[in-house]
Image 1 (cartoon, rainbow, N blue to C red):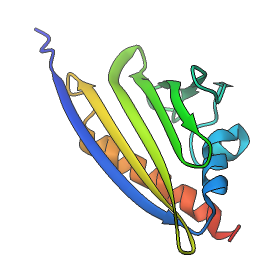
Image 2: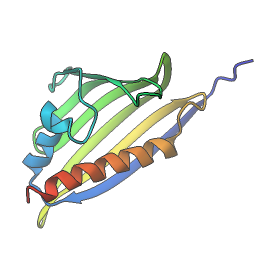
Image 3: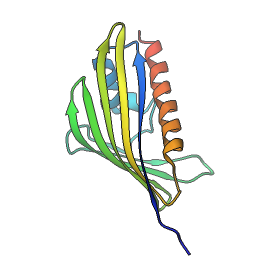
Image 4: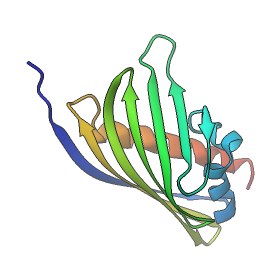
Amino acid sequence: MNEHFVKHATFVIERTYAASQEQVYRAWADPAFKAKWFSKPDSFEFRIGGREYSKGGPPEGPVFTFDAVYQELVPGERIVYTYTLDSNDTRISVSNTTVELIAVEGGTRLIYTEQGAYFDGHDTPEIREHGTALMLDGLGKLFEGEA
C-alpha cells in the first residue's frame, strides 16, 4: 500500500555577498554565470513567464528535473519563481521561491525564502534547505574573486 502525504514547510536562508545588487542579480539572470553555482540549464528564459529547465544528476544516481517559471522580476532587487522537482519520474516537490537583494555596506544581503510542498517522503524541507544553503555558499565563493 502506498502512503501519500504532503509536508508543507517554509525556510529562509540569508547570505551577505561582497558584490553589488546588480552583480548578484546577474548571477541568477545570466545562464553561463548561474551554471557555475547551480545546475546548467537545458533551457533558460529569464523573463516574467519565462521558463528555466534542467535535467541531470550524478552518474549512478537519480535523474533530477528542475522546471521553473519566473513569476516576478525586479532587476537588482527581487526574483520570484515557482518550480517543480522530480527524481526520475517521481514528482518530489513543488515550491514557491522569493529571492530578495538588499544593498548593505560592502555588498548585498540576499534573503532566500522557499515555501514548499514535499511529497510522500521523497524529499524533506531539511534536506532541501541544506542543499540550498550549500549552493548559496558556492555562489558567495564566486564573488570572492570578483570583489
